[in-house]
Image 1 (spheres, rainbow, N blue to C red):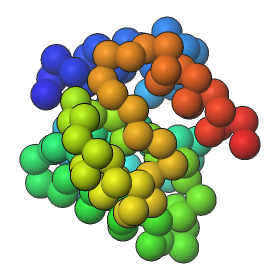
Image 2 (cartoon, rainbow, N blue to C red):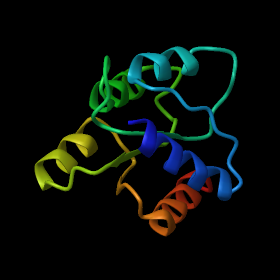
Image 3 (cartoon, one colour):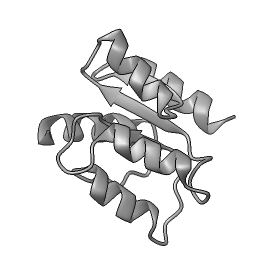
Length: 112
């Protein structure tokens, strides 16, 4: 939703990240295949169009993007959903609005 995109964007900017924000997986995929290079992708699971699970699967199957670290950021706390996210290739699975955990996860993944 626009609310969560704004909150999470503000978190990322407060960490010193340069951020591109899109509304769904289709836009994210287009951005990834543009001219900009990204160090990490933070995605929700539930989005209109291509959802986060399909986006991550596509990224990890792509020769060009398979090494891109991906954080799934969601309000969905069911273990079954987390397992699906990790099974498609997410590098981390975090819950919305936990700013410090998100910072720690991004720092760890970007510095690998």
